[in-house]
Length: 177
Image 1 (cartoon, one colour):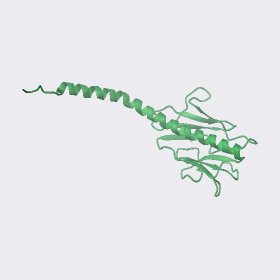
Image 2 (cartoon, rainbow, N blue to C red):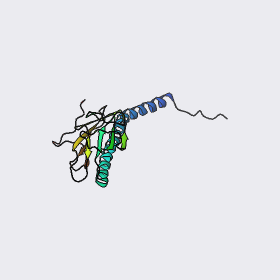
Image 3 (cartoon, rainbow, N blue to C red):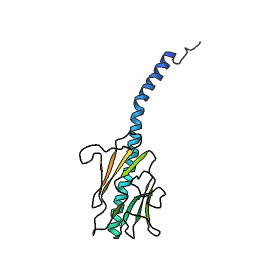
Image 4 (cartoon, rainbow, N blue to C red):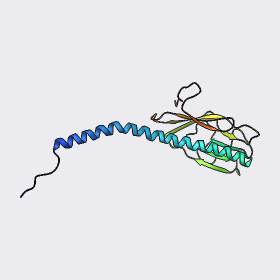
């Protein structure tokens, strides 16, 4: 006795592939936005924790601690573009804008994801113990492909960081090159 043939007809196969293509077409852009947003969140969190760590170290050890952009992971870059990376170090000679000199302890190094752009309104941020206030300013963190909404890390005069999606006028942060 012969059993009946099992399988899919050409029509069923074409319909299944078409439905899968539609579902992937709808879901792929959302997935790209989700991944871009996660990437921005990771870079924002890294900066947030660096500022917090600098503030804590300056208060506990009574030292001046600075954060500056760096492309080589050892010295400060004289620029407000932080997209190449940044370093956190003890600024023993208290120079302003901060410059890492030989002998100054390097506390953290970060290379920024190439798909993320970070621009600040300062060349460096310096956190001091309670006798003097810290450098205030804002980092704007953007996705280079424009898939995720920009966000900002705002550092107060006391050195406390906070994340914002809108500026003081209630407008979203702009990432124009």
